[in-house]
Length: 296
Image (tube, rainbow, N blue to C red):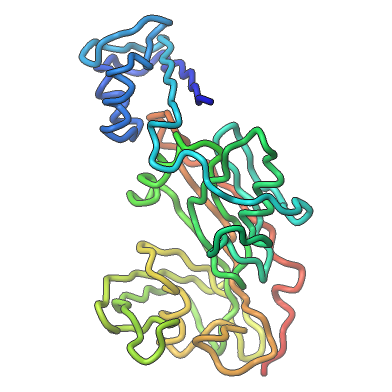
């Protein structure tokens, strides 16, 4: 098995050395090395050294092999694809609308019933993926991004690290918030509960969460949330510390019969193998019961 990408350089793009182009596409150095040594990168069908220029209108072809990757084939047992709601799909990327109560991925060998198991069934036996890029807590719904080939994983991971993947959430929280604002308290481990995180906890790291109020119910506020960092339970910890825990949060909120009201509403991201800085935006419809809950 191999994965081949054929990319035609936009006509207006300035000429640059092939190595510089591959680096700008966020292909890791070790993969560029493998492509060069085995001459698996061509321009207009011919091998070209890494120092030679590539100009607009020319076609670059890259071929990746399983041995280029530490884990080329994820060991995910396929399960029923009935719950897979596809929001966006290309030859490389897949974004689905994750359901409430579904774990993102297996934690044990042979485990089934997780979102990743369902997506493996959707992709079928001919696809080696899925390869997970983002994670959502079990009770969180919404847009979940993965790739269908290993070649795109390091590129999209770099995009996430460099904040070229923007995640916007919707959440119902307890109490009355107004306007917009930013939480900046660092987040670390909770020494009293291994499952939890805490503002200024052990080994705290910088954490920045922005919010904007969207709607109100009695004693509850709908907020739009977006993050500059990605700490574990960041949204939940920041809001709870501010006195506005998420509705239905079993770890950081008051006892309740409600399930968690947190939804990854929108993903905006750069496409792989391009220097185009424009973002593709995908929106996940909210669950039908998202704004139906009790106040206790």
